[in-house]
Each structure stands twice: as structure tokens, then as C-alpha cells.
Image (cartoon, rainbow, N blue to C red; front, side):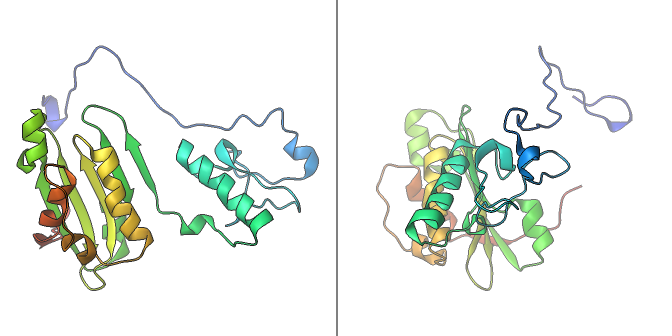
Length: 216
């Protein structure tokens, strides 16, 4: 509810304050090995997760490249591919993605709206409320929405968010197309199974509008 001077007041039973994280490197002896860290004490790594010391790589919590289990596993894949397979895999090839397993769940991939605006690219937006999706009505769980950002010239998917039942799974439909660097029309023209959440993604991709000015 609104308080004095236009400020918002939120009532609740608990308050969580997150002020950042520092990696637990105390037992690693990284300083003795000459490994460099940044000002937040994360180990500095290059695009292949190598440190400044030959023969030492850093993956997971200690390198500050993403606080998710799936990111840590991909760190391992990048290091293993470069060390043993002769396959030059890089962190910069990775598309940001995550899920929040709340109710309803949320899936997010690629650029945020703020990043899209900062890019200066010509962008169109597709939006859809979950209450338009037959599967959500069948399940009586119609809360949420889908939103996707597309480059108007290249037809490349830049980012998306899906909040609603199945959102943490359906988001991979967009993620895989982004990795393939395929245009959004690949999804738009695909036939998806009825009765699913994913079947309405092509409909959303057929109803774009320009990205309007940022709301104050």
C-alpha cells in the first residue's frame, strides 16, 4: 500500500536482506600459489576458466561466474573439453538462464529488459497472460505471463521470461533455439502438442509490438 510522500509500504512476517556473497577460499591456499582474485575475492579466470597460473583452473562458486548448479556443471564441461577433448569451449558461449521453483515457477533466459534497452537494438516484444493458455485453465492455475524480446531486424531471440505452470520447463524451448542461433520463426511455424503450455508460444510469437518507453 502507498505511504507518505509516494513511498510504498509492504507488510510481512519476515524480512530477508541479501547483501552479497564471498567465496569460501580460506582452505585453498590460493595466495601461496600466486592465483589472482578480484576485489570480491573471486578467483580471476579467462574465457576457458584458466587462472593466471599455468595448470590451475577454477570452476563453481569460487570464480563468480554464476550462482547456479547448472552453471557449475557447465564450468566442469568447459574445463574437461579444453583439457581432454581438444574442444575449445568458452564461458562466453553460455546463454544466461535460470529457474525459480516458486509457485507458479519462473523460467528466464538471455537478456533482461534493462539489458535489451541498453543494447540499442530495434526490439519487438511478445506478451501473453497465462490465463489465455488452455492448459492453465484446465489445471485451474492461471496466474502468470510469458514475455519475449526479439531483434526486429535479425529475428534473433534476445531474452524471455515465463512465469506460470511449466515455465521452468517451457523456457528451454526458447533457450535451445537461441543456442542454434535460429530465428524465432522456427518456433512460430512449428506445430506443438495440444494441450500444453508450449503450444501457445508460437501464438505469442505472431503478435509482436515495439518495445515502448521505459515506465517510470
